[in-house]
Length: 298
Image (cartoon, rainbow, N blue to C red; front, side, top):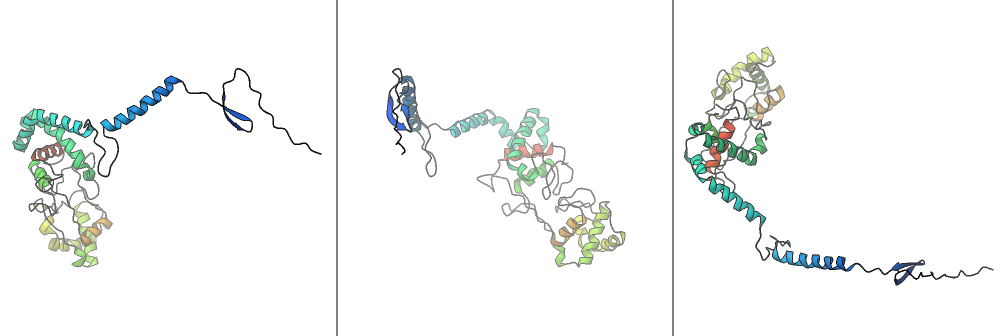
């Protein structure tokens, strides 16, 4: 006959602290109060946190955070620093907006300010398309070479930045439109003119097709790209005789270009056309100077 086990009560040692009175499987919890210094430190942090949320921006609301009684704002501090720097450079900014671009190199202080300021503008507004190093990408022009669709003088660059290309913002934007020759030419004619363009640019080509494509080119393409394929900056027609291609010079890409055409768009960056995000005249002149001194242009 089995005996019911007797629950043993833990023997308390005389030097042990009091317990909370709770017991789990014979294990009791000591009632060790926290040190007074720790408790007061904890209470002070609570009070500090409450006072901080009252004095400084803290609690997020629907549109903004609570402003705080002190009116502190990191954005206001940054804007104050910007305003201070702008005030210090006010004379340079005024000259940057008014002096003719061609004369910038005659004033080393102004030129240095324009290049450095233009680099900042480029990184903020242009690098997303043209790349951080201005080398461009497929469909976005390389600004480091000498192949400029609309002219690469510093004045031409400033005009392009101001008015953009094929946009609906500026009435003075650069504008040209290549026809989609898939609606005009047969597939055989397109294939032949593609081979002729590859011949113009010194690439491997089918000589027989290129000979047939020369007539198609002269009838359909030479009005914009010129008889020798060197293009026309007045119309924004690219040079087809070099090795620089905006979309690609392989057979497949050229066939797509001739068949469907291309229609790249660049926004007008002047604040006249973009009131909220546009560039001032000083910023346009600065970024034009920066792009021109990269080594491309004319």
